[in-house]
Amino acid sequence: MKTYTSRNGLGEYLSGLRGGNKTIGFVPTMGALHQGHLSLIAIAQQRCDVVACSIFVNPTQFNDPKDLEKYPRPIQSDIEKLEQAGCDILFNPEVNEMYAGNEQWHLDLGELEHLLEGKFRPGHYQGVTQVVYKLFDIVKPDMAFFGQKDYQQFLVIQKMADMLNLPVKLVMCPILREPDGLAMSSRNIHLSAEDRRRALVLSKTLNWVKENFNTASIDSLQQESAAMISAEPGVSLEYFEIADGRDLHPATADSRTIVALVAAKVGNTRLIDNEILSS
Ligand code: PAF
View 1: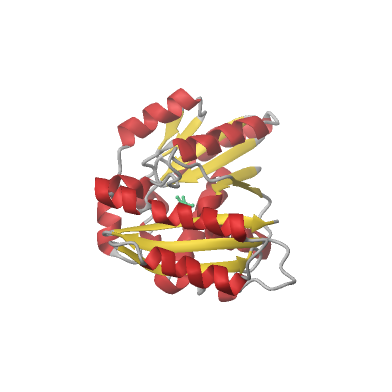
View 2: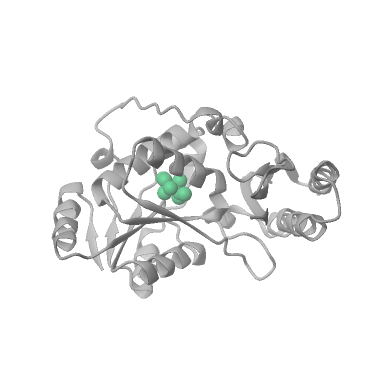
């Protein structure tokens, strides 16, 4: 695997590959890689000639400095995982390689920025679009691969790509789960054994909603789900929403794609999960 810490080094190497008509697949990450990330690499390998992964813990998307500080950074084991997965290129820049200073960035993402995650993490999606824009500008990928677990993030990045006419195809890849149903996440390592067990209420509730989606009303599913999650000790629900998969407004009879999305704090760890109910 070729590893770059500088934008110029990576840019030059990639432009050589592009000149040789290779298609470039890109998997942006913040590291602490798990099977979910590796599944993105595997999908990218099926669809593109060359796969580049970035590991960069982006400070501008953290609204809580403590969260940024405690974000896991196991770079050596991440590199081993990428090598074993057969990833071709790693981009692992320092903060000053990506940001010149206190750069101002604002993209009008409309309501999508303020719903659900946006309500609980103000400014988060400005930071995400800022860094993904920069990464796309450096890598110039043909395709970029993101996990469905961050469903709203996918919509936000798609909106940015549409607004700025970025020549990249975005691919949403399925959520990977532990055998007991917990969605894989870099944050799971912060869960105590007790919290890890309690966190299962999220995937269990989403499954229950999926099973009952064709027979119960959206209102009743939403209310009962919120009650089920809130009844779990140590779990503090932030939102449970059955939403239109295109704009994340509450789902209606006209919604073609419908998705149930949840966020909750389990102990001190904030987790998100979702399930596509119809598409
Ligand atoms: O999903 C993530 O890990 C991050 O939000 C991303 C897309 C790599 C941007 O920092």
